[in-house]
Image (cartoon, rainbow, N blue to C red; front, top):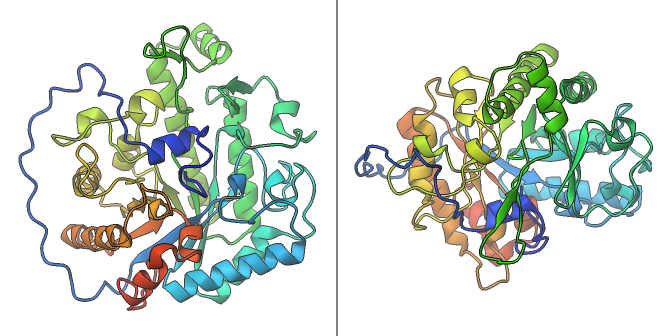
Length: 432
């Protein structure tokens, strides 16, 4: 989801998706949509936030974006950073953290199923000398913070990884599941046994840790990789290499078109994941934070850009309709005034796809406040919060939002942490 220095780590597809202005045109056939007309003006902002508001921040561990600050710190130093980050969250007025515990078929907790993450010690498979998730839970609980466990279901190796794969890593134990695509490794969503493994990982985690939720982001099938042979202006998109699982599906009598089959693979995992969370830890919630643009056919007039439905094979609108999640946190990583991806029409568009009235918590690109010329002013974030509150009130929801990411708040970039503490978060709020 998101990155430490915003414009750093540019090799990551997620960074490109989050930071850049989406420019991929809608798929043919999706452009002829009825004009929904002008959006109604929002009512005045309430003087005080509702008594319940989910105020969260993502804590990214991949590439050491948020925590630990670098690999190889001592167990004591890592735990001191955990305490400091939890204290920061409490002081600002947050009430929830979304901690990345599985970045790429690895674990930032004691697991019998997958190896320790290299972002802890610098070496995949090397134990850090304590159980990080247990400490995060203890420190979050002591400060009244919810803790949601964020897992990447399909990525198997990130582009920033440096150490060799551990012997117990899925790319070594089941290389038939894992595909090289671009500069990363991916678990093929078409491999049924791989889906079973991911569900086993989640079951094990929920059985042993009293987390408040399970969270997945926008990484389903990977963001497209392109090749530019000859003319750089003539980009060729490389298809994901899932031919073996596709042929096996066809040989078994499958009749779906390839794109529909890919969406079915992701749909099935999301459906089963939601059922698993409800079974193993009733009261915990499954949250999904997809790319911020709905499918082209579901967009209001004037909204354009990348289609996760067509490129990531993520039918988020279906998941909302079926209730296969407990909250949606779309990554609305654009300013209010940006033509084509404006904040308010996008939040309202997701609300229009939500017949069950599930909570919608927009993801805010708070890390876009930085020292670059492209930096946002802190007021962009505080005004997005005010706007989200008005829309949630119209929907009859308590509302909430999530910041990407905690490091921007911990560093108090351009005074954003102070602005939140003294402004939108001046009145305490409970998450639910």
